[in-house]
Image (tube, rainbow, N blue to C red):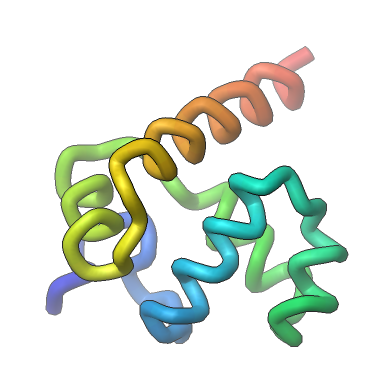
Length: 89
């Protein structure tokens, strides 16, 4: 499996859907907004976003298979780190 060892392992979403969700998240859309746009349940979106951890394999997969750009990946990692810091408070 291409996704084994990545944050999208066992997610039943196509590459297009994953790319769309991440791009909407990078544009600072909320979970419910992404739910309305994509038609996926907010728990599915939330689990995808919260489960995304920066690893070399995940980043390579997002760049090579999903189609995110390097700058989009950097924005994604920054937003995820900021979200995790805020949830710790």
